[in-house]
Amino acid sequence: MARVTIIGGGPGGYEAALVAQQLGAEVTVVDRDGLGGSAVLTDCVPSKTLIATSELMSDMTLARDLGINFRDHHGDPATELYADLELVNKRVKSLALAQSSDIESRLTRRGIRIVKGTGRIDADKRQVIATRAQDDTEEAIENDAVLIATGARPRVLPTAQPDGERILTWEQVYDLDELPSHMIVVGSGVTGVEFANAYLNLGSQVTLVSSRDRVLPGEDADAATVLQDVLERQGMNILSKSRMESVTRSGDVVTVKLTDGREVTGSHCVLALGSIPNTEGLGLEEAGIELDEGGFIRTDKVSRTSAYGVYAAGDCTGGFMLASTAAMAGRIAMRHFLGDAVIPMDLKEVAANVFTSPEIATVGYSQAQVDSGEVVADTLRLDLKGNPRAKMQGISDGFVKLISRPGTGVVIGGVVVGPRASELIHPIALAVSTGLTVDQIANTFTVYPSISGSTAEVARRLHHVE
Image 1 (cartoon, rainbow, N blue to C red):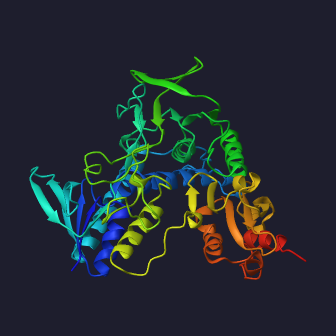
Image 2: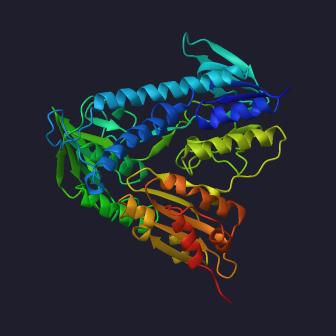
């Protein structure tokens, strides 16, 4: 029986453990923080739970437009909505802990051994030295293969040190018991924009500090423009081309100093400055495992590192830092090592989503790659404001865009901007991964009325007549 040791219990680790056990391996997971890792305990699950609450607040603002009003118990009109952040965060943390417990129970039922503590690779790679959290005792775990899935943590700067109360990383916001009166978010990437949008919807005044000329510089430019227009229309103060120099606190006031000398004051600040891989103290260099300049582990398309028998998955490898890609990389690693059929990771098939209002979902080649000449393709965008279901629901912002090969019409990319774009991107992702054409999408029945009908309409308009 092959022996597999996994260091890290996040999506890359626990999904790999389940596959390895299914394929007959003896599996040990060494986990420091709790099964599910940061994705479940401090990042993806908590943040999307908070965002789900904020989305409901946002949806309620449309109620009057749809003919719905509220009355208090005296019959007078009720005009004010508010979020009890203490209760919101209590629910957030409860759901995260419950999800972590469910994952641990699932692994235990499958006979997967869990060691609570930290692990490092012995120089000969035949052992993982686990240090137990409860008493700091060490155990040498014999193995035939190792998977490293230790994740990453928020990046902080010497001039912007979080205190866990007013200056916060995105992992610390769930201890707030009152809604910030003025939240300053530093960083306009996905994490920064998601939190800025969430607190805006919950009722905070929000200032977003962006070093670029628009939010979400790494996303589709059309999509980012739509989102920025919505955020500014809703009252968010976006400081474009503004770089943070320092963040300080004096009592209940937080001051963000910009490099051009301006200062922004608020009640709280969230730092969204990127991530640092958790690759220190693992014995990687001694084991001959290569890291890139940022400290991330280098892997190939089947999750192998430069050391024989050692694989890596998830945020500690950089790239698409998503729970979905971490889980897939972990599964691929175990299938490869244990001789099962395996399909190497293809990042062009990764569907990603920005959980804002509206959401932005993408897959495959981008508009930027088409515009730069990297790929030759036809693109077409159709705004949702003409969609009958969107009109019924009061949706006025968003679009569907398809990117296809000229001549053949094979779909190689797509973008959806709108409510629940994370759900609407799936048929486009299927088209990209299986090589479907725009005609095949156009000739597939859709429900009328539906938002997904816009995807079929874009496909029809991309039909190429010789």
